[in-house]
Length: 398
Image (cartoon, rainbow, N blue to C red):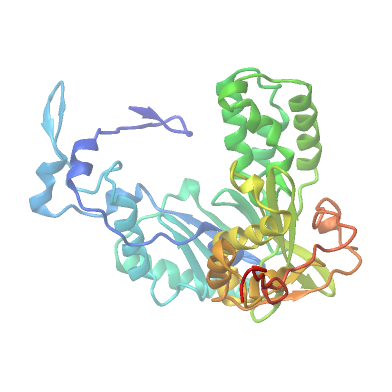
């Protein structure tokens, strides 16, 4: 038995052996980032939670005995889908997508058993709610009223605080880190690293800011909390006290991307423009592997672009991306003589509509904490193989 947050108990059965024997259901769960993005701009929202969602799906009669478990009072099996089956999440998501096929993307978003109904006005919302509740009644699906919120302007949803003005950090996650004492053991440092990772979308240059913590977890420095870690921890708390509010990109807009490179990490910030003012959509960062840290600086910059494209591919696929840089990225990726890993990266990036524009003065608050690129007095020359050919003739020859 596992105690839930509301004080009640949930019975859990060990289905590991059964899960190993079951083929994986590959039905995809929606991206949480994409769902959260689609909440912005809606003034009225209702947040619905299914009542014991999985238990509202009946098991196939021939599969009931496969869920059998032994208790002190006998052997029992489930007639409804239990928690713990590896395909339960995919099965429930498929059911929700079918049930709400006429509303998904229009006035409703759903992630497994968390349902969001969104509207521009209160009058419109009453109609959207009526449509949603009629659909639930038609399929005999029940809600948990204790976890439902109706007609709200903002609320926590899928780990974020969403409202008409943008996406904000969940205040509970912030307060948890702000109230933490300096972690002095490996287990506590790992817990801190996990909490930071869950806030990565909001933290500018997260890998650089938190590299002292990650170094503590390295094999030869395990658990050694030092003055550098303490300083980074204090600065992180200061940053989180005024974490940025993120926006969702507007359809058809050109998004700007700034890249950052250091000896230990690569970073990026994706922005949209709102009334001429850049607003952040997503911060990303990545700690360099030992081999990656030895790449030439420009190659690390190209790697930053590739890594960001992989992580933020929904934005790259649906928008033109404008990379703001004074470095010759375009030349090193598209020169006819490009080869090796740069050639592979160039081919992968070729599927996106990426443009390169020079940097101008940085005025937006979103960028004040983000050093857009490394400093260079002059861009390194891009060598052309055409200038490298030479002919040497032995003097003894003819």
